[in-house]
Length: 324
Ligand code: F6P
Image (cartoon, rainbow, N blue to C red):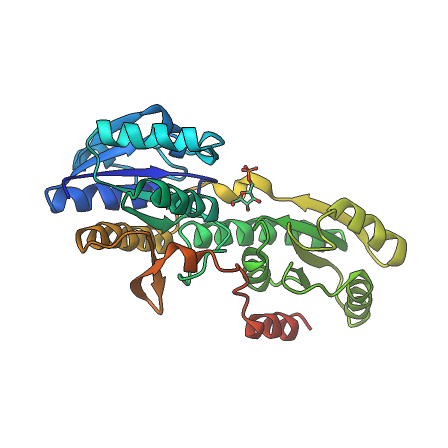
């Protein structure tokens, strides 16, 4: 093993820069060459590479986004695209690849390895926390903090006007961001795709809490939730069935993807980045490096993609009890 390439793919996440930095510096530490690939699998197909040394990644641990840029590559879904990517890797004498991203990134890696027998190790980089085989994904903690900070601000104005706010958060098909940020921000109700409780129960619960003396309410809605998918329609339904509150909607959107990574994400990214190079040196391939019970572990890509439903029932109980 002499030369390792690194790329970020799919939706960006805070901490991706810290992960790249750890991979590059780990290569320098082990006297391996490191090559950055721009724009994820797109850059692989086009051969958009740049040699990186330890100093190339200075002053980026604190920066959100990814300096290598990211893309959701259509070309990598085709055999021709993957062949071009392989040809560029061979031409640049690259022996192995570290891919930082989410489920789409790992699915691409599996297919590429099956076709071209090329060593790839992945790092979980997504705000959604929807990857198996790791307790947390890189970017998730920062996104949680962004959401909680935003809801704290919404709470101020909700309380001044006795209003009900529906706050939509990201997460694709997973409710991790909604559930944990909802508990952290003291939400009244949390709607997640893993638990469909229905509109009527929501309205009943909001009526009950109003009666119990609450003057305003925050409902956190995961973007993938059944009844929350159309959040403006849900707001109309609540308006029709609950006169007690004036209802407002806030969609937090892409602010959840940006910003300086939290210390937790920087440390997680650093540990996993070092773990990726360690794994390649140990001859591992086709695996993702994750953190389980605070230990760095490697899990086969296929395991990491098995269902995203990691929601802990204990958390749902805590949310119910603390919002009474
Ligand atoms: O996977 C990260 C994520 O931000 C999801 O939470 C969201 O559903 C999706 O990406 C949005 O994708 P895009 O930035 O391509 O609109």
